[in-house]
Length: 230
Length: 230
Image 1 (spheres, rainbow over the protein chains, first blue to last red):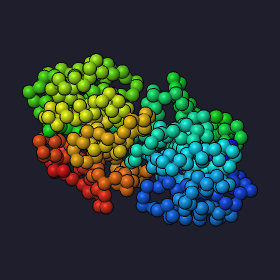
Image 2 (tube, rainbow over the protein chains, first blue to last red; image 1 turned 30 degrees about the horizontal axis):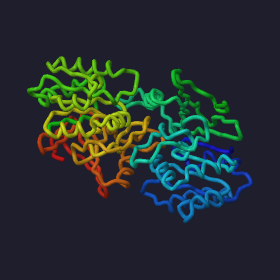
Image 3 (tube, each protein chain N blue to C red; image 1 turned 180 degrees about the horizontal axis):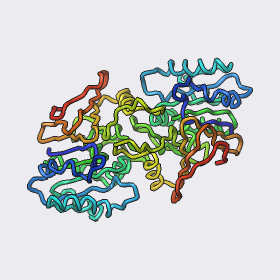
Image 4 (cartoon, chains in turn red, orange; image 1 turned 45 degrees about the vertical axis):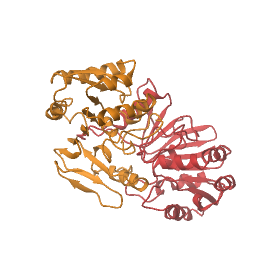
């Protein structure tokens, strides 16, 4: 497999996908056309507008992007594609759409066959075992929480450290992930913004400017440096 | 109906249910025994320990509390009860348990018959139309997101204003609720900590120390003062 699962598409103050540009060029080496999956976007921006945003970026690295929503037979479009990019938004909406259109398994098989895949935020969540460690609001009810399982763990994108100054009684991100581990025995990779997971063949590493926080059942959370294998 | 749906059980620096004590005394007037529903608690604390915490508070106002998990026939226990309190935790776990044990409708009918109900956080979410505006992580998959609909809207507990200093690309609470409204046409009441909803008969008001933020489809969000009818 040849994949990048990134915490976010855009760093604070940065341009869309800018911080990942070099990595993206390497990911899609030899490929001049990909399919963009816009289904996480719940509103404010249409699938067409979201696809335009992706196209603009990929134009700068001489790759054409077509929105998956444009195809009548979407499974066929995935099977004919040479690579994929799934943008962020709401994971519940993305997973519901992929399951209802029968695309989750088709996409998984194509990526497992070696076609490059880039996911950001919600698009990274679907690379994990299931979507039970998303931060998103459950604005729609998907027929299941299972995802593609491109990596043998779950992802928590936009991982945020507790803010000791916050006088607020909502759970911290760490508390939420620990609660997940009371109900599930799946490793969780807390990806701070600026970080991503790189899988090339069987080798899976964490990359980026920050440490990556790992959570496992019955274990204290620990940190991994960029380049560490998972 | 006679209910309180509170944003949180505990204010920053305060004791469990302390800020709501006067209101709770009025809610349960004439009642000396209630059922505590501990099912939102995912771990760290057992159902027994969680119930002990509730019992300690209710002792101070001369009300006995029994944990619903202690009863073999839980539906019968709900039907025989004189009042209810559902504690906070994880809304997905709470809703899954109530649906799987067939208790959501039983509880709803008993509250609609006039038995007093107090909910905090996850316990407030289940008073709304559905749980699609919870902040919790989807650590388990419930058979549905429908809730009791004790009020004709949804609740977002622990409502948090955007922090302009945060250099983080996750969605703000307001963005999440606006995304909910692209997929659903249900009013959302953003309950800041310190606030609660009071329903007495057909009269529903927002109460507490803070303004309450209201979100409706195709409308700019607006604020209501304590005492306003909903």
